[in-house]
Image (cartoon, rainbow, N blue to C red; front, side):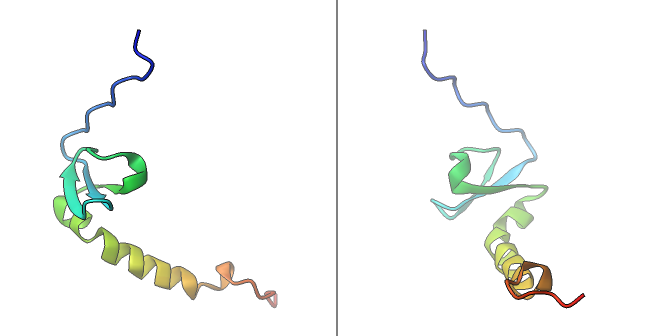
Length: 72
């Protein structure tokens, strides 16, 4: 009896960006901790790091995420 189940195959049409290899993959090929996604298209997955940087910048300036007390 196997101790670990075989990893499920990815679904066609789901795209991921692998952080470890810096590549776009269809269906999850690498482990979840090493990838971002799923994305609807290969192009979206290819821009994953740019999208993450833009979102981080937006959140950095969002007053809801600041440690300073809010004035209501």
